Image (cartoon, rainbow, N blue to C red; front, side, top):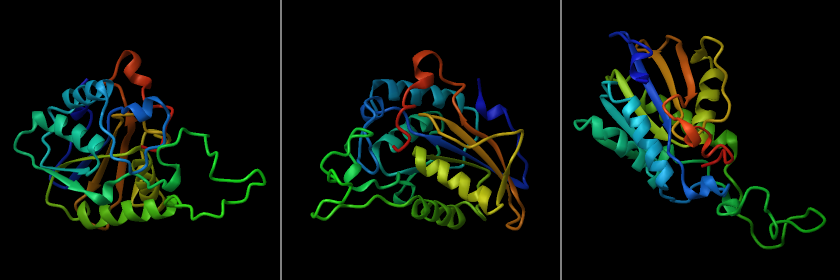
Length: 229
């Protein structure tokens, strides 16, 4: 399947393809990554190559990715088919910071709370709030994507970041979901597509969210257990 042929565009619109990175060993082991700089595992590299093939015919003008390795490596594999497009790494596209939860298996919070549910006396690094991540993502979008001269933009980021960006745009009525599309968990290399008008006051459309049709077999469900990474 060539995802680039699903939706056409015109001189009056911009299409933004937002891709979650491929699988990491931490995804597989359900370890909270947050902003840990983890690499793709072999399955993640395969997933990245599959999504790269699915997007090879999309005439990207610009590419942005989180500066964390798992996202940047995924972007680099996609750009093999787009050698003239420069990868721009952005700190603002990083995953949600998870504080002292980073590096822990989901549900294993021993040592962070007492038996009574009180916080330990030592200083605990708090996770970034969903509201803060949404604000960070929306600020980046408004400063970088809105008003762009590009027609096709590739963005490679992380599960929570992507979901919160899309929810924020929907909440602000900057975009609307079409064809009954719902926003939920975004699996590894899931592709979301947003089409926005070049006229700043216009409303855009969420054309797809977390599409993993390019994956087959075990890759289709890989990374599903860890939504923050």
